[in-house]
Image (tube, rainbow, N blue to C red; front, top):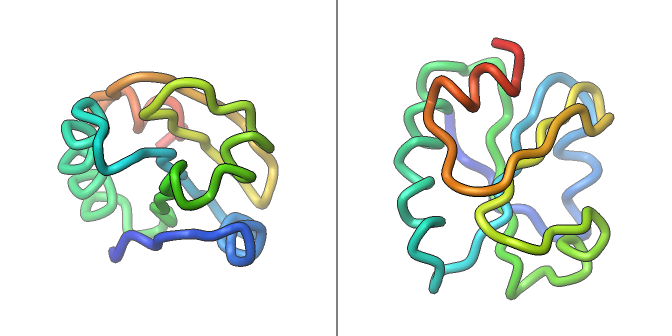
Length: 101
């Protein structure tokens, strides 16, 4: 499944239905670059989950809205409701566990 890059205008609609994991990241962040291939692997294995990214430099309002203080931060949504949050690089198993899949 393709990873969606979100803005403040597209965020709410992207997480409104079904399951979604959102990666708050930045291009200059080494751990974020480590997280990216793991998210790609998750997206491939779980086609029913929307996998999204938010660049904190481009979208500081979204980062502030969700209290993102360190990156990478992953937010997990079910039908628009935030159900989990992890900070730091997560393994595939950790993402699956946090997502409940």
